[in-house]
Amino acid sequence: MWEVPFYWVGLKAYDLVAALGNGLLYMSKFVSANEAIRQFPTLSRFSQGQKLRGSIMYYDGQMDDARFNVSLALTAALYGAAVANHTEVISLIRENDRVVGAKCRDTFTGDEFDIRAKVVVNATGPFTDSVRRMENDEANAMIVPSAGVHITLPSYYSPDGMGLIVPKTKDGRVVFMLPWLGRTIAGTTDSSTEITALPRPHSAEVEFILDALKDYLRIDVRPSDVQSAWSGIRPLAVNPDADNSSTQNILREHAVHVSPEKVVTITGGKWTTQRAMGEAAVDRAIQVGELEDKASRCKTPFVQLVGAHKWDNAYFTFLTQRYEILGTAPTSSTTAIASSNLDVQCAKHLSRAYGDQAFKVAEIAETGHGARLVEGYPYIEAEVLYCVREEYCMTAMDFLARRCRLVFLDSRGALAALPRVVAIMGKELKWSKERMRKEIAEGETMIGTFSCGIPDSK
Image (tube, rainbow, N blue to C red; front, side):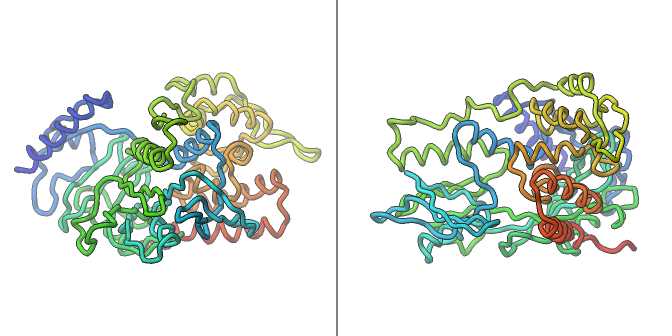
């Protein structure tokens, strides 16, 4: 019972910090066992032999990290950055004992080219140490890679948009279950891992999450309910100048380090602190490059991301009232489906995903690309064309995994949508039949990693 006041005090401190930063949504509060079950009806009254005595309810924000990441790239381009995806660093360029650029490779064409800069910033996440060792093959590690596995479940696991966090399971780990993009996301495991470009979840990790949920829910938690499972790599930061033989040296925030050859490395951290991370990296780069006469400090506090300028919570109403969509593009041999107003579910999705740029997607939908890509999800064909034309989308998996989150929400749904996405992109980008077959094959392989850890139904 001591845990209730312990967590209550902690969340009240959380409320205070949020209020001071103008980020408070609502105040946290303690609710009785009966009230907790009324609001979260699938919650069990008994867990691990103990009776539920109450819960602490608190509120938090949520984001779509794929859409947020794209908006960051678009905003950088708006302010003059040159953006290049599907590009890898193969070596660093040195002059006078200082790194002044990088030799890069276009992973599509194989073409190699040099990029030169007054300051080189290494912000490569799990691949931080790989880049650092291009500079010095004996450089100490700056990250400890940790694997986190998540699964997606149907929406009824998080009734009425509510989630569940168990801060300490029977083996001491944290498990959460939260509403996310119309479904429920649950996780997470935390274990050491090898660095790979395509991490895969293991069935034992998925089963751990399901077993942990069973302890706290009174519904049948079934392996067959898992719609997608994936593993991500957390680049936990460590001090490269300290003894890293102990996990006590792992930093809980981001770290900035300047090498002897003046490469600025930033790693660690998390999405919620990405603006602070960017500011720390840019300010250090200005200092290292002696650029104070051109830029005094990072300007991120004054920059709105693309999509934010004219957006508000009611933007979806403008979309649904203004735009009519066609389900299929008319050709000489087909007739277009009768037009209809953009439905509310789709309008809300477009508004949240693209902000004040959503009207551009709706305009494309009006030309005959308003059909849903897969039943049960708000994603429409027009989004594929918009992402190709406006958001550097180059492959089918760029769209299904990095522009929308369909493969994370439902691996079977993504597999069903894959041929249509390839057909739309192939026509727009004038792909050959060979390229389209390759896109299908590579898409099936990657989507397969989102189902390989799902255990068989029992």
